[in-house]
Amino acid sequence: MTYDDDNIFAKILREEIPSSRVYEDDDTLVFMDIMPRADGHCLVIPKTPCRNILDASEAQLAAVMRTAQKVARAVMVAFDATGVTVQQFNEADGGQEVFHLHFHILPRHADVSLRPPGKTGDMAAIQAHADRIRGALGG
Ligand code: 5GP
Image 1: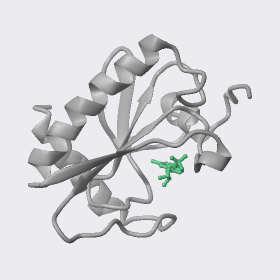
Image 2: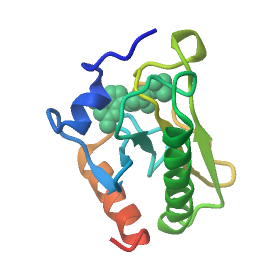
Image 3: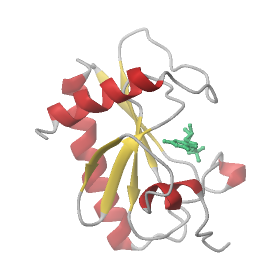
């Protein structure tokens, strides 16, 4: 399996399509999921190409996990969450739909289920949630 430069997250990285950005450093970018399964659902990706954990380098994985921890801690504060789910899928049969490595960060609360996948969220709400996470990150 080879990396396809035209995948949607590559286009987000190149700013060819818009996204609600939350955080970036030299190696990683965090932006809001457009079909949030929980308030504050965001995605952590490496800035360099790889499909998923099967072809990622140790450096890409280390950078993404460092950022995932940072953002997981921030969403706990931003959403007064009592837990956080980190999800990651590999290849179509593993549930992956976009073939640029990404980790889902999902703030969780007691007795609140994740919403079903595939439903586009309200853009104003998503933007407001991005602002909250950014605030918790000190940005
Ligand atoms: P996965 O590949 O892990 O199954 O899921 C890909 C994720 O990307 C889904 O949660 C989906 O809602 C999200 N997604 C798909 N297209 C876009 C998009 O154009 N912009 C953003 N921000 N997220 C997207």
